[in-house]
Each structure stands twice: as C-alpha cells, then as structure tokens.
Image 1: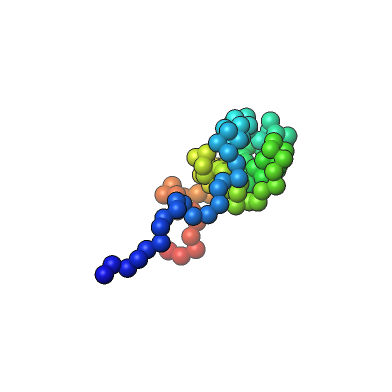
Image 2: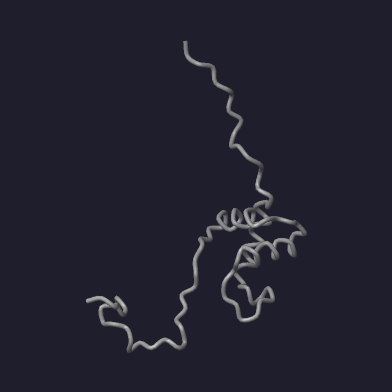
Length: 104
C-alpha cells in the first residue's frame, strides 16, 4: 500500500510584497542610477538604499531580505565595483602579477 500524501497547494511561503507593476516601476527607477535618487557621486545600489527607495516610492516598510528578493526577481546580482587605488604604484608589482613575496 502506497503512503498517503498531503495534497499540494502550490509554492510555500508568502506572496512577494511587491507586485509585478511595482517591480517594473522600481526597475525604471534603478536604471536611472543612485545619483538620480539623491546619492551624490555614488555609482552603486546597496540593499539599504533599495529599502529606502521602496519606502519612498511605494510607502512600504520592507527589510533587507525583501529588497534582496526584489533585486533577484529583477535579475540583479551582488557585485562590487572595480576600483583602482589612486596611490597605487604599478612599479612595485611583479610582471607575473603575483605581487611581492618575502620567500624565494
């Protein structure tokens, strides 16, 4: 005799807090960049900034996890911008790219 199983009711968990229409509006605003949202000379979105943007746009209080889920739904991935140090001295680097080592 096969074991009885509970009937399936669809995906578990609560529904997303942002609708598809709200996500489309958020995407358009994110595409304008952080400077358009009032962050001076900044070129990357942080989750804290996205939380603040959602609160401003939709009058919703959401947490970092909800902001992360919204960003994932929009196709964003976690990345750090590539920045080079201004005071970096290229002459100190070895040609092999391994840097300076104390052992030989």
